[in-house]
Length: 120
Image (tube, rainbow, N blue to C red; front, side):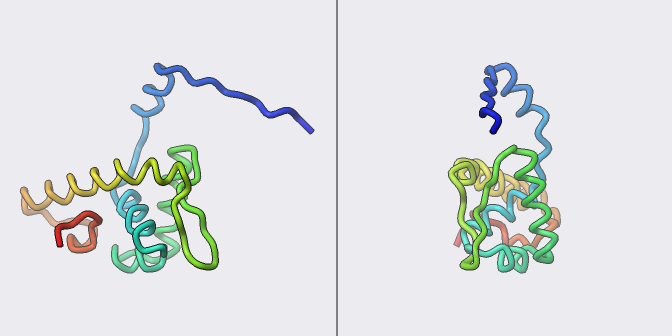
């Protein structure tokens, strides 16, 4: 059995890694909706995506962030501790993007009413 390896990331290294992140808005929307609904399939349907398509986006987001974000089970999905940490910023990003699209009158890749954080 090999011993566990500890990796120390300095503030500068962490900032450099964050500056290279390529986060897709639709992946963030999917994460927020899947966590809210407890279902990747229902989140995909609301975003006008296939379930495998959203699953791929979520997997790519997890790889990009270097951590699992959702625990999948026969009951559905729930955020991991890392996923919980990402949800607040993801909700704010989704809300800002929704407001931006409203201000400029542009079409969104998903139905605007499906965006997480929309006003009731």
